[in-house]
Length: 101
Image 1 (spheres, rainbow, N blue to C red):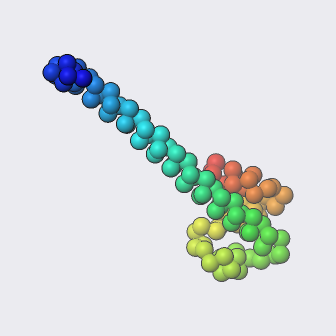
Image 2: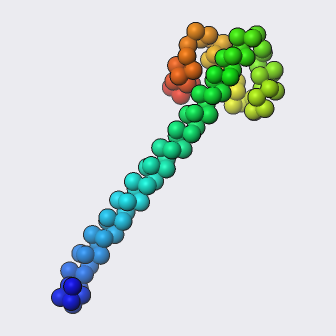
């Protein structure tokens, strides 16, 4: 360590390796956090799809569903449209249709 602290080039290389290791840890943590946010978002949408499917089966129209779910029309309409077009599909299938458009 004493020798390394005396040699500026070795010290630079050591610090560069340490910073690279720290960057890798930060990147992994960011990716993990992104994955969690995506899972939460997917769970919310799947829940909405399921609720909308149930309400459509009860012959409720878009305005009633928006009112009951207390969500913005622009958030519910794409789901509602897909549920109406594909009444026999599962929530997961509807989710894939919405995200692949």
